[in-house]
Image (spheres, rainbow, N blue to C red):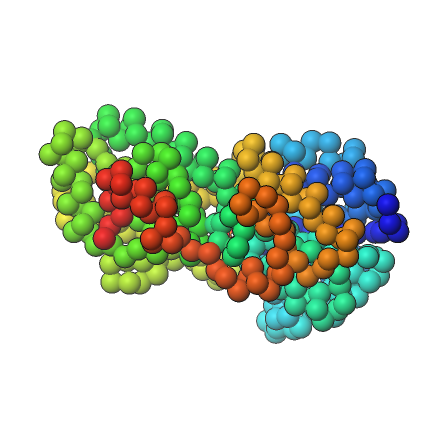
Length: 360
Ligand code: F6P
């Protein structure tokens, strides 16, 4: 059974469906199988920055409803790089040593961090600097973490986007409109291409493939000639304007996020083709909702595997899903291989094979 351990778990970066299912799996495996203690660290590294550190003891009772709830019961943040932390007085400070001190103050033997590539890179840097036994679990609706075929949250986001497309078909057909659905995904088009195929889109625009408004309008005309008086377009938020400019909007605290490409396309398509256009921006609904069965399954398998890595004292590794199995790789390897949509890959070939226009 090995020695008794006290492990910490935190969620970092944007939330997504399935995070609580991982927390549940880690708790079940660590407490139930190994009889270890599990501390849930609150609000990612912020919880460790506090003195005393902010954490709660996790047991089976605390995670009883965790499998089906979205969000994260521990809280999270996608701001405040601890190596360049923005202070209230406008200065930037390296607060990494405070976080490392928090880990040691809690008497942790190991830490599990659930994050996307940005969070995993930061957590790994902290682990190396502070002698932290760290194991990573990939999560992100963007599905852009290297090596692993699945990241927690992606499948649910694709389900939500697909359902939106199913709904848009009827209203588009009733009004003879071009309906544009703008989906998230940061710099990768995984949500757009997957939901676009599953949801029967006519046009899918992703950042990995350049497009022209002319090509998009040609497809709309072709559909009309075939007797289809409506058109469903899915666009990934990071698609640029035809001139190659990023489309962003200002959110709170002066930060910028992708957003607005759907409206740019609506105007451009309508001006070039005379079609009536409407836009739906799916936004953060893609991160909520009940986790899909696949996300619950992956979350459960990743949680168990992460605890087993700690039991075997295999640190600095990230659990992955490869060839129908849970495996693990060095974190550095995974985060050095950003995973965009392969323009020559199966999904792009499938879309082209179905006659879906990719804008090129
Ligand atoms: O990385 C997940 C994600 O939802 C992206 O798809 C999106 O671009 C971004 O986070 C939005 O960030 P925020 O929650 O800060 O608005």
